[in-house]
Image 1 (cartoon, rainbow, N blue to C red):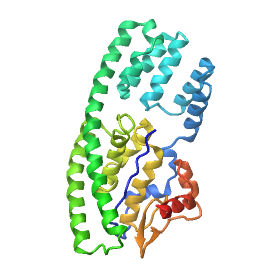
Image 2 (cartoon, helix red, strand yellow; image 1 turned 30 degrees about the horizontal axis):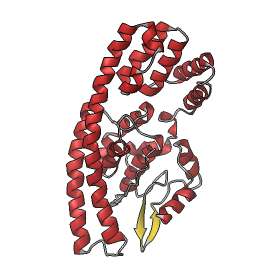
Image 3 (cartoon, rainbow, N blue to C red; image 1 turned 90 degrees about the vertical axis):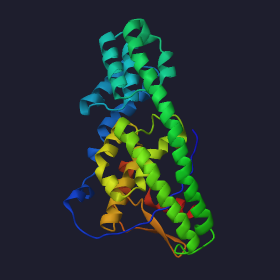
Image 4 (tube, rainbow, N blue to C red; image 1 turned 120 degrees about the vertical axis):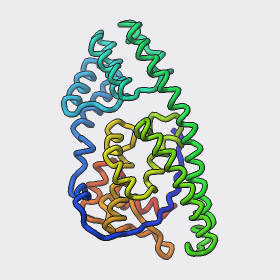
Length: 308
């Protein structure tokens, strides 16, 4: 897996007021992360190499807990069902997988068990996947260029202002920040249009850079844009397009801007050269909240930030 280093530069504006629209701070992760569902899915994959019947039973138990949204999980179930010669079930899950956005044409093309059950129906689904595969290749190229613009200007700020210890109110810093705002606003228009037309896309894209772009662009967009699309981000976690570890950054960004606090400990700023966390709502339980989304402990996170 290619590792992409991402530079974050945020201008944190804290506005203190109370609003019922931020009641999510009192909720746990269960409306986004279904732990029982995830455990059953993990069990299914644990047996997937040696026991198709047991694997399928765990998948079906998981789907009884929560309707499946991840097209790649649905594809895997269709393949398992086809190997068990369950034709109707196999193609029901295959069609649902395609409907939800399965897009790996080359991988699907190599499958033998489904095509043996019904080559006509399989090829109908395959052609739909081919079209989506082509679309996502094109979108990936577009988003790669946006990633380079987004991270390029932040690298300039990091190298020319942060590392050199320059005042953020200096003329040079202001010029870089003005360029950053222009790039961000231009990038946002493109990404918002793509999301409007195709939904939130992350994992399905073809490069490590493009997979990060929708997340990054919305993360440092105006906070109102995050608020307006929070349900889309929640659904993207369920569909597998947005890694669960990234979702808390959205909630914390809203809280930090609206209330000057955060739940998961993702937001920080530099003060006299030191990394300082935005105050936590519940410091005693922050690691519990972070664990629900697969994040490292707050202590490990702070250590990582300071090492960077």
